[in-house]
Length: 345
Image (cartoon, rainbow, N blue to C red; front, side, top):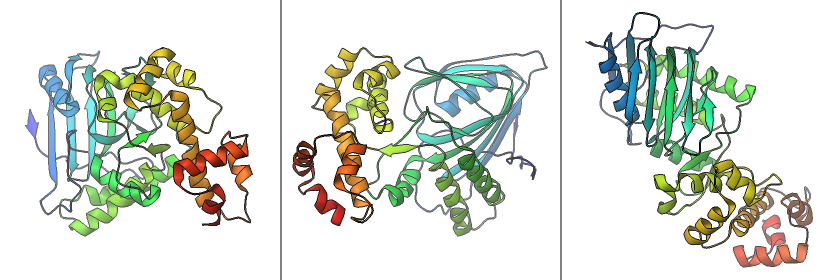
């Protein structure tokens, strides 16, 4: 086994080959220590399995040989905010992870694979960048592959996201069902190509490194739809993963003509189970919770609009409130002011 840093080779025709640290919690403070660099490679499946288990903080990992002579290489570089990683293996990998503690964007350059979430949903690992499940248990399956990943420390990305949602720093919930647009993928690739030379340069000054990380993190925040919302700690437990998926479904699809039954189905839950869990953990029914979400969205839209651009009635109807009187009463009870006051700013 070798332990050394292998610098990636630049290729102007595609996304750069990138590297990153092992998955784990980090700090968002400005780093004053050298970046962490490592290459682990060899021809031993047991060593490869141990490396993948450490990286995913996982269990029950297996590595089996493919048709080619077995070899693997794990190249990583990063600091306490953003890390880059490239993993190459001629064999097959399967394992379970209790949930990532960093936000991770990943894609394969060669080979393929899939992940299976706790709710049974299977997601193919594409050639284009996508966001891996965060704080959610899943099983990963990889065929012989070359995989790239970018890891963002949770507190770093969540702090940066406050510049967009203008609220307190909170966990981000990405809509994993959404397919990134071609424009979002292009922004990501442009940011990645621009930042990689700095992020892989050990001698890069801390300020230069931080300025290279920021546009890449912002590109992630445009790669897939996301939302922030408060959830009880009990809903973050692995045993509540399906209920949490259903609740997140309500947030991500609130603008669509959905019902709590749709959320339960998407999460692999019985509707009655979702009702019981929402009443116990959130203090209200799924229907009331969805109505609360939509009230919040109307407030955000009214606050961002001007009276000459729209009316309270138009925004209310857009979010499914047909009876303006009942809507105004519920709005005032929730926010302490009338919808028209919010619109007037």
